[in-house]
Length: 258
Image (cartoon, helix red, strand yellow):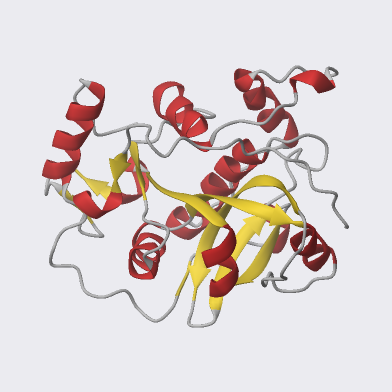
């Protein structure tokens, strides 16, 4: 179904304190594989628009898409999240149903922070770290090791037209920018990446990412990845450094578990 873009991702503050992925990966990791794919196990009809055809709740819809995808890829089970769930959660960032003036979007880091502190449908993320968007190797490591990553991009008129035409997102020079959008990235290969947005899997080129990718985050899910007995997760996350950085940032101790 054709979509009309609704801006929902507000600009991020690059100077705002945050954890960095590069600091908490173990140094003995092998190079990322040529391709990785966390999206294929998910049925095409499982994603859902989740309200982003009505309001600018893309930051919440992307959170829900990550949880849906992780449940299928990590636990081989469906996770039912609906539009009402997402619109209610969007309310934590000022939205009030029936009042268009409150449909102002949200900052990705604010949504991740709220999910970490207060949870989303019964689950809190363990922590979240920022990815260097200019480093393709780090981006590939993030997707390969941790599944879908939570990212912010800029949508142009060309991107909207390409989506509606079932085309790959590729750079179209001098196309007007429409605004910020939040999606997940859950697969990559030599030619490009696969995103989840507007209820579908959308292909994009690496060139498109390099021009329109604005921010990217790994969200650590304790149920799927972390093993407290070894001090590492199955991907080789350095929990000693993660704990120290988390404590320095928040003045709290990192608690393993939901």
